[in-house]
Image (tube, rainbow, N blue to C red; front, top):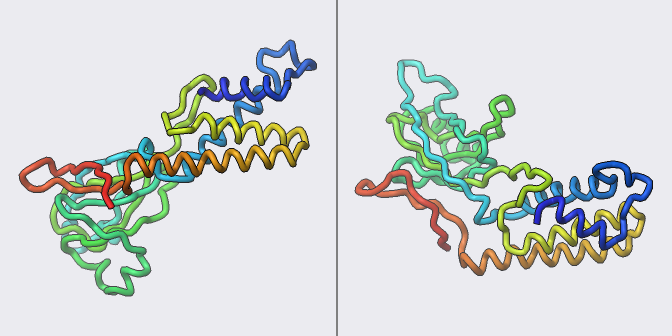
Length: 237
């Protein structure tokens, strides 16, 4: 269902017809319900790593060069601005282990200063100027290689009449959340809490359904030297 369809259903159910604004092309209640539907969709999208939220990005990373290696040589901005959260990373045909940068320093204080083959990566704060996700490789790369990143994409910005990605059970969860939001706006807080509990149950069911369908977590398996080095997304324990 589109945000407009969600809003229409809820407003009709609660008899929010906005008679004082009947001359307007978009009644106030419907407009607010549409806005709530979009906000609730983003909330649901961010809550779990849905299969439809996964994105695979492949790009080339140039080797560090020169006698004096730049301090940013091991920092990589992911080219695709749609990527939100980095899940796993492959350096050509080798998986890199995720580690907090503070832990990398404890493992080996010189690791972040060396030129070599990266074995770890650390998620870094998003670059707000370029709107790109950022990672830091454990070493300055000694060779130009292909970096493959499995991540979660940013929540899509929905238009009023645009269908969201087909997450299982999404319509039921959105209807319950938006009805709860509209009831709360009407100061019917007790009834709103009932709808929120229903919506949360739908959300749990959505996640369980996705887990049962795949049976496993998303994991990046890099291609070997005889195949496609870009890797692929598999679902494994």
